[in-house]
Length: 383
Image 1 (cartoon, rainbow, N blue to C red):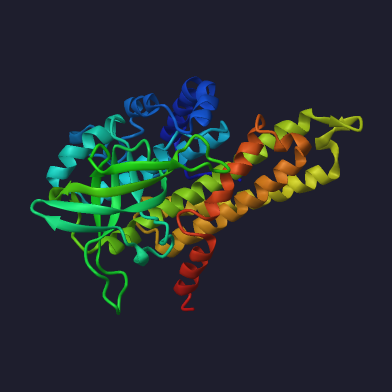
Image 2 (image 1 turned 90 degrees about the horizontal axis):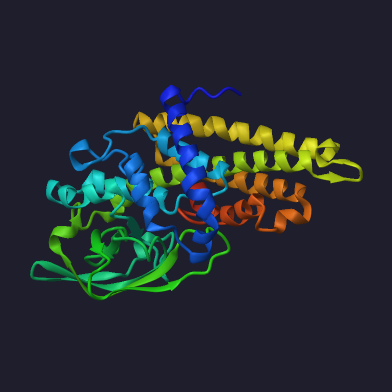
């Protein structure tokens, strides 16, 4: 089906980005995967292109208000090339909106210019060894000492944990109300050069090898009170408000990777010969890819509608939950079927389908598991 969600400006942006990825990312991507993280030069180069400054006001070096469709194009083009742009999506698409929405003028002047140039990379630390989807169970705590908060605790599964310059940390600033466990949480912006901040293990994941995921800890880390983001005690509200953007991003990536999987597989089956003819010539191949195409086209309609809602400010938490649930589940099914059509070669990492297969599995877990998304959708139905 013809897509109508993008216009000529989007097409020009897509062309520029595709050329950048081919020149600056693809040749060195294997090196990033071996290192476990992308080069810092990537973010500076993306900053020069404006890709780190989406929605940052021009007075702080950004490009100003930007349709989320441009970030969707980034996900689509990266998937089409079989790569990731480091943690650009996390820093710019997921964490930056917290600063844009909650930072006061003094904080914006301190933090946003570096974000726009790619000199300042962001992360967010929510998950703890004993608190994942249950954010109300967070135990990382602070105590007030003069004009500082003293921070102690541990976080795990922190994407960009070893590379970030600033980390938004969800902390407990007061005991939870027994009748409302969601109270007492706050957001602190922590400079990773602070004494007492430490990066623990870089976790050895099944996939997403070019994206670092770490354990981090805080031992009497002194954080200036002026680094409190938003109002004290309101972190749960802020997280609830921003998680739909993260879940939309994961759904968009699910669509992008599923679409890329079909394209990679079409190229493979048209060229691979078995029993005297191409794999594409077998009826099973045609039927499997037809199923994949129909399912991904249906997902495309959902994602495109969500992009319009996001730009209009109308995307709800349940809308985002449906995007993440459907996007990641479809991606899992489609990529698995496409790998099967590659035969043994699909299990070899030199083929992009193998990388997609490994990278995609976690999408049904992070950002809230598929089960969490079902709970959100069910509640919206009055169940």
